[in-house]
Image 1: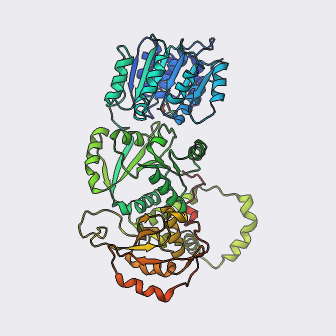
Image 2 (image 1 turned 45 degrees about the vertical axis):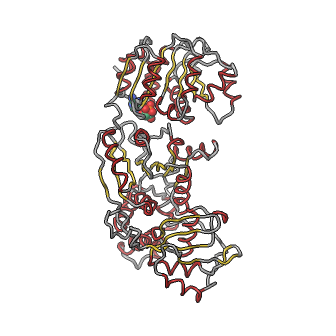
Image 3 (image 1 turned 90 degrees about the vertical axis):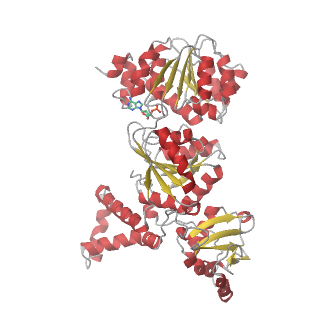
Length: 573
Ligand code: AMP
């Protein structure tokens, strides 16, 4: 007998979830469904995201709602629009074999009139974010007098986002005798307070140890200096050719600039943060969900509630201030029983944080080295040839050309052909990585990364933000025109009308030769070794001989590197 039937779920629903691939209940479902099916208790479930908690409350709700009636009977509150849509779609999927089920998703950033229309037509289950829900309640556009169940999903996130007051007011509009089911990944005292305030003797259930992260997640950390962080990120991505990941940043600007840098350099990345319009965010999420986007560079708030399966890596470009954010971020990978890796780029100073996180997650974090250039090349190369095994050959399209091609290549052995095709794909990549520096922070005072004895020279350039440059643009502008690899450029300090940036000493001449005196949108570019913390002072004497020997009218060219293995639109992961 199907184990969901044994739990007391009716066959129509069991058939529907079987179509979703649910063969047996997850731990939280197994424990929560029997309790919630009685409909008699308040409930607190401590469970990480990705454990199957939507069905844990969703299935018992469907069992207890009277679908012959068309008034609201259940309200599910959750922190984000993404999660709201996710839950309402899940509920519709679970209920697809039932009649007269009406679920409405109520969230901000979309037309309220559409949502009001759906409510007027009759609805039994309302899935909502607190702000918009309150708006609709204040308009007296919904009647909650017959609500039997309220679910507070990701309660800790809702409180983190400042929804406490909204939740209070919403709950006041529901009958006192309703049952409240609260789900949370963590149980800070604010959530405890809610439980105390609104619940009577709730049944409590914890899946796994409290606050413990998912067992299937490996936690790695990499020691890098701030200056090398962006290069380290790229290297990790290059070292994991099949990566489908989220890069977490601490601020909107950091997310935007990191994404811009990656895009300019030909990575299949985009950003998700609060400064984007709802349409832009939806577009990015659709691309990511459809796996047409390989790297989502996001802030914590924007990425909340993202439920995308098969995310292979979560990269903490900057560690969050709060440990709970770390578990939430990491929980985006290793969903539905899959494995995942959570990588943190940290500096020496963050070691204390790592130790604290180890305690919270209940797992040791592994210290890893940022791979060296040669290792990355090897990995990419083998990955390419693995793809040779799996690629689908379109015989019809290729066959007509084959005789001519074969004749053309007659003089080469198989080995020679492989070498040549590899070179076509990889020369640029090898070039970039040939002299790639070691990006690991050694902690050695004499290390080349240390400011005192730096390998880097700080340069001044007379363009800045007012010229429409972001640090990512500038990086691409420098690298594309000079052919200097991105790794050779250090910190970029973009001001309004000029920029300071650091470059490795061995490329200072190339940069000055390329840019100094060149024309940029009708203006003469000036590149000089900065007098602050300047080294190699003699260098800028040379430049006057070389003025004006190149033109940069084109401004910024797109910085596509070898797109053959940067553009993953082939969706091979
Ligand atoms: P949730 O924690 O509700 O966000 O669920 C995480 C993911 O696991 C979703 O993609 C669900 O579709 C999937 N899932 C939930 N329950 C099961 C189950 N019993 N068997 C297989 N997959 C499940």
